[in-house]
Amino acid sequence: MAEAVAAVEEGATPLAGATWILRSPIRDEKLAGSYVAVSGLAELRAIETGDREIAIGAAVTHASLCAALNGSADCAALVQAAGAAANPAIRNVATIGGNLCAFSFAASDLAPALIALDAQAEIYGVSGPERKPIETFLAARAHLARGWLLTRLLVPRNGRISAHARLPLRKAGDYPVAIVSVSAKRSSDRTLRSVRIAVGSVEPVARRWPALERALEGRSLDPEEAAEAARERVGDFQGRDGVEAPGWYRMQVLPKLVRAAMCGVLAQA
Amino acid sequence: MSISLTINGETHATNRDPLTPLVDVLRDDLALTGAKAVCREGFCGACTVLMDGQPVVSCLLPIASAAGRDIRTVEALSDGGELSPLQKALEQHDVVQCGMCFPGMTVALTSFLASNPNPTREQVKQSLVGNICRCTGYERIIDAVLAHAQAMQGGG
Ligand SMILES: Cc1cc2nc3c(=O)[nH]c(=O)nc-3n(C[C@H](O)[C@H](O)[C@H](O)COP(=O)(O)OP(=O)(O)OC[C@H]3O[C@@H](n4cnc5c(N)ncnc54)[C@H](O)[C@@H]3O)c2cc1C
Ligand code: FES
Ligand code: FES
Image 1 (cartoon, each protein chain N blue to C red):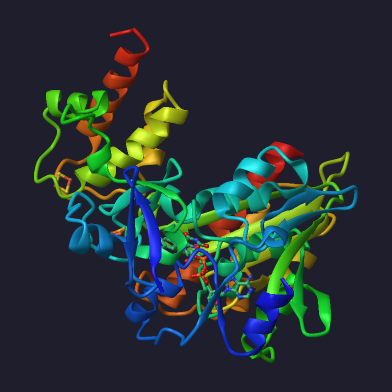
Image 2 (cartoon, rainbow over the protein chains, first blue to last red; image 1 turned 180 degrees about the horizontal axis):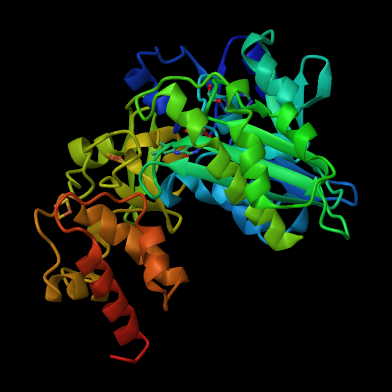
């Protein structure tokens, strides 16, 4: 690991599954002068389930994450996100770290799922490991001083129920035009406690939806009501225009996705 | 720097740039033209090969990442010129049209059926999410796969 960080510090670019990097020419981006392969680093390929958190190495692939954590109650939204992203052949090589470190990629499925689950990102730089809330990392990642690797994602084991809803324009296989991930604390009376709602692919970087979280806090878990509350607040976002969909469309589909995610949460409540 | 690749059980050394997509080495250097570079974006699946038994798109796989792994292409699915049972089923059900997508389809389905020998229609569809066919409309391919799976289970 230290060697890889030293190489990055000297200017090498991390290379994981390469499914983003090899498409650089399509995005009119130049390939870097030198790369350091991180997929082989054992520390980055482990998934450890502790008493308080699940630690997922950044070089774990989408497919390995699904295989290892399928059925784990603490990260349902994340498993759904990793299992629905892209297609089986891509999921076999594309890594969690590569997905979160492709800075200009707005349609990441993992980003909103990890935000909803209140995960932290562990970054290893010259001064050793450091943790940041995933949302802070996502917002800051493009501006961090060079010389770091994303090493692990840490998902707290705090009994949250969660679900992930996405809208690709084909039934599957292409980028989702909008994504909603939801998590809440389990409550005996089926009310929403400590609800976290994250939206991806609508704006350039995934983020929480604080006004909707406040509106739903303490309310009964009713997907229709949640969708209505979302409809009143879609103006909180500035949808990005893109080849798959214009910005207004991404915003317009949010209530339906909130409804779908809430149905997913309800199914586990 | 020479990179050593194991393709269909044979070792090949190449001096190409480590970031060269595997599909280019397969097609241009080794004359293994089954994998097709159609979209080069990971969306169409026409370039699918198996890496350690799992389907991957060879258009987005740098040869450096393929080094030391067991790579199998569609050419390796037939045994000494004899089509695999799946390939025979696809032929017998007459599902192939232009054929552009079929090497990738067959590779993806071979791996899928190895771990899901008795799949549902929906599971077959999900397994083909990354394999685009412009000609057939998929349904007959899925019919053929289900009939083949049933026959292999002794039900057909
Ligand atoms: C056909 C197709 C469909 C897709 N559909 C979806 C989808 O629906 N949802 C979705 O979320 N994604 C989707 N993707 C995106 C895909 O998930 C990304 O291409 C992938 O996650 C990138 O991971 P990688 O390991 O291949 O990264 P790489 O290409 O290796 O790297 C990507 C970036 O991350 C950096 N990097 C990698 N690892 C680290 C690290 N540990 N620390 C610091 N920097 C690092 C690299 O330097 C590079 O800048 C799709 C991709 C394809 C090809
Ligand atoms: S050419 Fe590789 S997926 Fe289309
Ligand atoms: S048979 Fe022509 S693309 Fe599938």
